[in-house]
Length: 168
Image 1: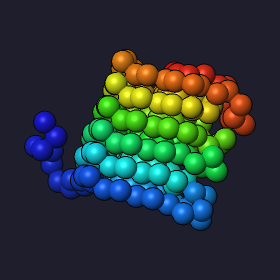
Image 2 (image 1 turned 30 degrees about the vertical axis):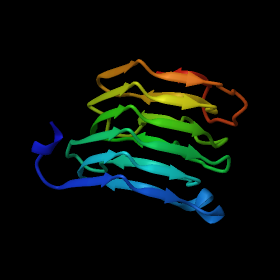
Image 3 (image 1 turned 90 degrees about the vertical axis):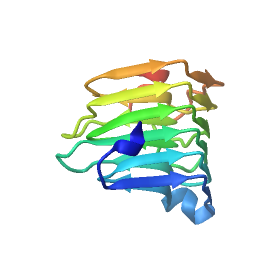
Image 4 (image 1 turned 180 degrees about the horizontal axis):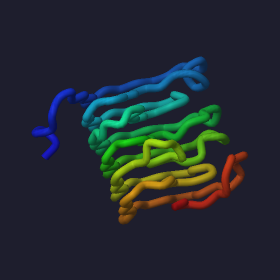
């Protein structure tokens, strides 16, 4: 399991983060960079960025993002959950609702950067009323997307890219 990962290990467990109107345009609720992470059983609402995990380096890190509840405000410019750059990602059993018009996904794994995701598993998540994408993956080396529920998809977002419930 993830308890045996080498340091540094960042854990965010059972927190509640509520952003105000300023935070809906500016704040990240939980952000981890350059660390192995476990982000579990948190509740986030009203923030521009819900949960974000990144690497920003040549090192490869691991992330488990599990059992979180994220509500994205209409003003948000970022996904509810995003894992980008050189991170082995498990995004499992989360609930993400709402969406910003520029967020390009309720759950996002990977990006178009130099630092590609080596592996991502997106499993058993519930996404409701997403705009642009429910789940989007950009250029991971290995990708598994299965058992997710995407409900009440709305395609009216002013997205930078095409729209769809799942974009691979």
